[in-house]
Amino acid sequence: MKELTPTGKLRVGVNLSNFLLVQRNADGSIRGIVPDLAQELAQRLGVAAELRKYEKVGEVADGAKKGEWDVAFIGAEPQRAAEIDFTAPYVEIEATYLVPAGSPIKSMGDVDHKGVRIAVADRSAYHLWLSRNIKNAALMTADGIEASYQLFINDKLEVLAGLKPRLMDDVAKLPGSKVLDGRFTAVQQAIGTPKGRPEGAAYLRKFVEDVKASGLVAQLIARHGIRGLLVAAPG
Image 1 (cartoon, rainbow, N blue to C red):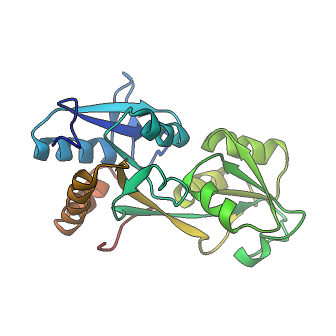
Image 2: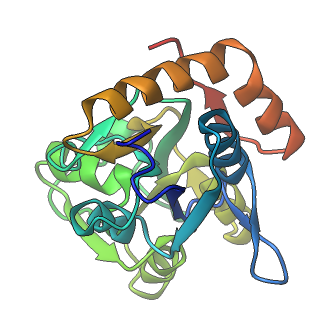
């Protein structure tokens, strides 16, 4: 309790840009899998949840160093692990590529070549993965998912990287475009707490395994009608 609720409440960092896990209501409030899991965690701890909303995932990660939150629902990536202790994932989201009509790029293996420019949302979990693994293609970053789509369109880039559910919406707007088969990674959505809270981190790991095993995560995916999310395997 001292580590997870030092202020007497559970301060929860929420990434508003992950449309699969968080949706906005007309009045500015939020709903979705993350708010529901945050309330479940707070209830088990016997405290109130204070949802701290961030427009971009990079801002959530920065909040760990600033002491702005006690737990955050965020993709587990090695670059973030220097400041944040992560649980095993509770859900996975496939990330893949979209290419425009007439593209010579037909498969995953065709992407990482010189002359290929990849539009990607800056500091997203899949951008961090690409920055570690892409050797020849150029990563062209934009400030958020929608901005990466606009960059891809306006600058006529060769590839758009993104979460598969979003790309399936994008392909419907672009006649002749194609989402490549397969995935280059699966974003591991986990719960994190700032470094230096070992007992809190251990409690969170048990919480994640329980909500997966009990079926709660699967129930929330169904309740909110979210396509493209997979319950992660046991940690």
